[in-house]
Length: 44
Image 1 (tube, rainbow, N blue to C red):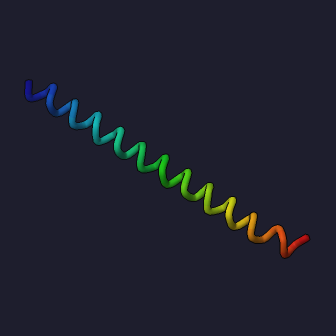
Image 2 (image 1 turned 45 degrees about the vertical axis):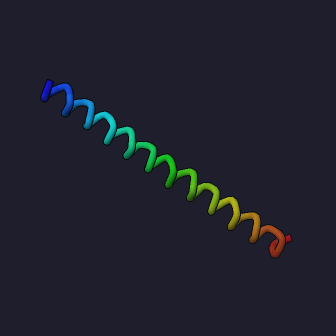
């Protein structure tokens, strides 16, 4: 049971880390899009 508990903990930790990475990626993408949207009017 100890090993199973540890593996479950590891899996949840990995999933949490992955979701954090995804969140950061999406956030930076949105930020970049907003930056580009802000820059476009001044260019054109």
